[in-house]
Length: 302
Image 1 (spheres, one colour):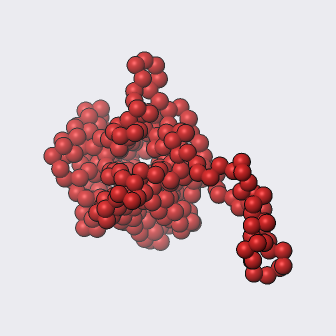
Image 2 (cartoon, helix red, strand yellow):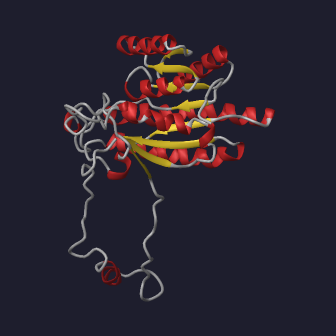
Image 3 (cartoon, rainbow, N blue to C red):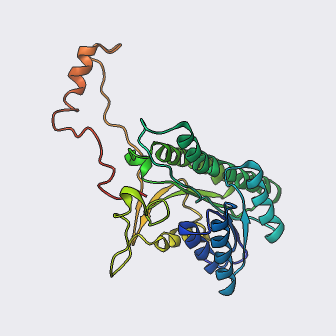
């Protein structure tokens, strides 16, 4: 049920870090892997090394370079996968980067560039994959499709030093949940992972110490710990899992529960709220013991 022989996977940002481990995992399960990364010297070198490592282990892989958030580049990525392997079955959106600042110190470019890579980068590749799978399902009846998005607990906790990143990750989650509703009728699953891992985005600044490798023992934040979940969600065995958000790190997985509403507060007069009535109703809930702000770093965010 975990064998991916004959399946084709695209992974963005797959030269290093999480993407590399995910590419290696899918290749070990038998998938032909298309590794995408940005066309910069260091990224190209890392992606080519990952391709060679997969091939040396008997797998199939190619590297395709370009901007994951560019429409033309993403379309060329998808076309190259189809031209090389004849199909696309698994789309793992992983690429991203950070430009951290608090909201009062962040420039327009620092906001836009991070949202572009993460959120638009997911969008254009999700559009290519879901459109292809939908058209194939209509033409052929049966189609194997697995979409895996990469979000972050920054979406939940707010990440005060990352208003751009946290916003993009919230958008990724919402977009993937919408895609899951559309695609499940074709037998195609769409899910979100929230990894906690030591990557280029977490090995600097205030998160560096949190994610540091231990001197000995199990390395809970090594990115290889995340890859098996991606392999599982991409497999036939997970065909009934869709529209889920999973936090993964070390040897743990938490399934994020849907937000729930409290019991309702209603105005005492049965009509429009008055300010005194609002205070009387809400002050008991937001009492002196109420914690006004969640501490997002009580657990390391991904």
